Image 1 (spheres, helix red, strand yellow):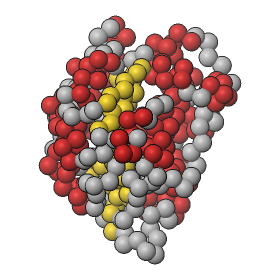
Image 2 (cartoon, helix red, strand yellow; image 1 turned 90 degrees about the vertical axis):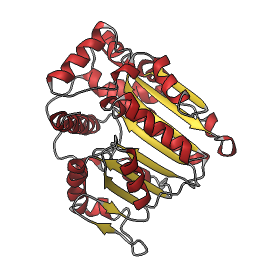
Image 3 (spheres, helix red, strand yellow; image 1 turned 90 degrees about the horizontal axis):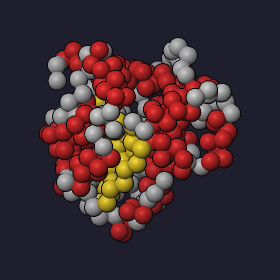
Image 4 (tube, rainbow, N blue to C red; image 1 turned 180 degrees about the vertical axis):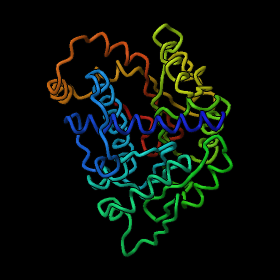
Length: 315
C-alpha cells in the first residue's frame, strides 16, 4: 500500500468519528466521552447513515459486554486500528473495564489521540491513578490499565512487539476488535493477524465489522468511491460474501465462527431500543437502509472457549 493510500485510509477514521459524534448528538446512543475525543460533528448525516452506525455500535457493544461478563472481567481487550474510539471509557463508565485495554493504530492517529487524551482530565483519570505507573509520550500511552501504541498492522512482528510492550497477558481470555480495518490490507496480512492470535492465545474471541457482498453493483460503487479518495482496499476479495468472511477465520484456527449481515443484525437488536431510535428521525425509504446494511457484516469468532463459555456468546 502506498503512503498516499495510508493517509487516505487514516482519513476514514475522521469520517467514522464525526458520524458517531453526530449520531450521539442526535440521541441514537449514549456516549458522554465522544465529544471530548472528537471536536466536530461535521455536516448533517442522512438517517440511514445514523441508523447504520447505531446498528454497528450497539451490536459490537453487546458482544463486548457479553465477553466481559462471560470472563467475569478477568480478561483483556485489544482494539486494532482503534482510531478515536471511546469504548474503553464507556466500559469504565459502566464499571465493566477489563484487566487491560490496548489500542493500536498508525502513528499519526495515535499521536492525535494521545494529544486529545492528555488535554482532557475526564479521559486521563480513567487510567492514570495513584497506583498506576503511566508513561505518556508523543504517540503512545502505556499504563497498567490502558495502553495506546503506534503500529502498522501489516507488520505482525511489530504488532507483537507493541502488544508485549503494553504488557499483554497471553494466558487470559482476550478479545480482539477490528472495525473496517482488515479490508485495507491484503488477505495475506489479515490472515497473519488472525493466525497469530489463535497461535498465541488459548482462549480468545475476535469481532470484525466490515464490508460484504461487494460483487454486486452497489458494492462496486462503494469500491469506486473509496478508490476516488485514493483508498486502496486490497482485502476486498475476502468481502465477497458471508462465506468468504467465515472461511478466513476457519482457515486460521478459529473453532467457531458467526457471520451475519448488518441488516440481519438490525432485526435482532433489542427492538424496544430500535423503536426508540427510529423515532428520532423520519426516514422516507427503508430500502436505502436495507441496501446499505446488506453490504456490511458482523463476524465474531472464538477459539477454545469452553471453560469461559465464549462459544455460547450470541447477539
